[in-house]
Amino acid sequence: MEPSNNTGAGAQGSAPLDVVIVGAGFAGLYAVHKYRGLGFSLRAFEAAPEPGGTWWWNGYPGARCDVESLDYCYGFDEGLMNEWKWSERFATQPEILRYVEHVVERFDLRRDITFNARVTSAVWDDAANLWTVGTSNGERVRTRFLVTAAGCLSLPNTPNFPGLSGFKGKWCQTSAWPKEGVDLRGKRVAVIGTGSSGIQAIPVIAEQAAHLTVFQRTPQFTLPQVNRPIDPEYEAKVRADYMAHRQRNLKNPAGTPRLLIADSAFDLTEEERNAAYEKKWRSGGAGGISAIFGDCMKNLAANDTAAEFVRAKIREIVQDPDVAEALSPRDYPIATKRICIDTDYYATFNRPNVRLVDMRVTPIEQITPEGIKTPAEEIPFDVIVFATGFDAVTGPLLAMNIQGVGGRTLKEAWADGPHTYLGLMVAGFPNLLTVTGPGSPSILINVIVAIEQHVNWIGDTMVHMREHGLSRIETDEAAQEAWGEEVRDVANQTLFPLAKSWYNGDNIEGKPRVFLAYVGGYPTYAERCEKIAKDGYTGFHLSAPGHAPAREARRTEPA
Ligand code: NA7
Image 1 (cartoon, rainbow, N blue to C red):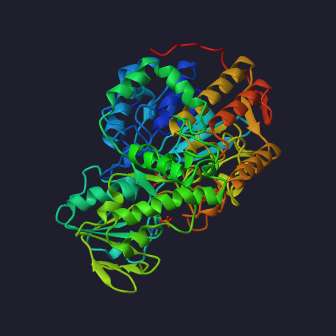
Image 2: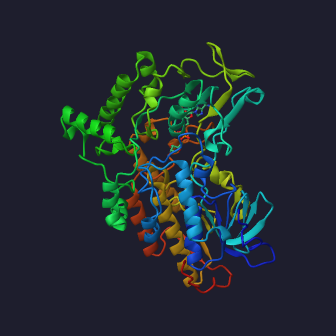
């Protein structure tokens, strides 16, 4: 691991930095590249020893992206797009990390990143108009702008089952998978949790373990991923004009290729509709069964046609009708919990070494030294795998101990749930810019598209401020309340609020129930951000309170 060339920059007694970036995942890496290229002095801090963010931590068996490789990559540099070749339709976690490493090398990003350094505090100094950022390795640096790129799914939902500390076997989490790996061969393994991570891991673990028991609290809808080596014909078509492909995607709500075939599921006969679902089921790809018809996420009856199609598939695949029924979601509309895509998930329950425990019938009472106890039995295990997800979107921001104007903490400001303007700023926290923050499209779209738009918008804003001698940007309560209402309104026009889901914060005890993302789609959101900037930053206040103007632009184009 290369040390940061930048160690010590921004420390007390030296000139403050222009920007501190929190995180070196996809968002942080692009921010380092972009802002360096714009001539800002900067440092990034990353908790992990290597770049990659959530992809670095989530190394569980079967970890794989659920957006197609040709789309789940940066679009800011045509050379990078053209030179990197993906091997599979959906990249594995190791291949994504190889891509990340390539990007880091290509743009020489390592020198501005300090690894093994978690940001543990950020305190706003209203007189100096600066943030002081503290890290777990004991550094204190001052910076004009604080840009959080800490990821939406990066703070694990740590299991707190009674008795866990006394468990004599090994336990681990998909979200922090041991780098040395976990030998599951011949072991009695439990997996708790059946979200995307559990659903990807379960079929792979079933092949390794002597016996696998899956503890399911809520059944999930999942569709076949139909992963395969990249189709050379499709790849050639995309690569013939990769940038144009990317631009076309940006016109679609999710920032990925368009799947819509009709405004309503009822525009087609039942036979035609099921044929469309069947085609989607067979062709695989991102979980877009909900994107085929325009009313799937708005009309319960339309949604149920897709849900019932998948339930029929479960009955067809799973041999034991009781297990099939236990695996069939019935109490929330399809895709209102993040839809999963899998390789042989439902079929895995036909294996003789796999068993499903329905926690709605027999919940986990406690972990014992030997295994897991339910009201019906105690099951012995050698390994327990927690695939219990994340404190999504707000968790990583709140964990940083951010203190804004007057010492008010972000925790206090968000006691009743997150309040932001555009998911980018919070009233009372000047010069704090949150990449893919709550209230932005983030988790509902191809997140790399969301990241690039935010990083670019923030970069343009910092340049605008520099050019106009401005050093402080903030939003106000009125702007963020209006935005919050809009985010709520668009969510309430959909079926999303009907599910108990991490989208609403339901998975974390005590977390206020707020829909965490903007459902209005990428194009509407991005246009709004552009218009706001063009109109003179409506809803933001830009000023230069008692400070020398920011430095003149130093344009150093990246290599
Ligand atoms: P998810 O989707 O939040 O899934 C977590 C799973 O763990 C889900 O099935 C939960 O059940 C279950 N869970 C959580 N806490 C418990 C407890 N205490 N007991 C039993 N079961 C529990 O996280 P993933 O990591 O799978 O995926 C997150 C995202 O990463 C995914 O959407 C993709 O975008 C990539 P629940 O449904 O809450 O009843």
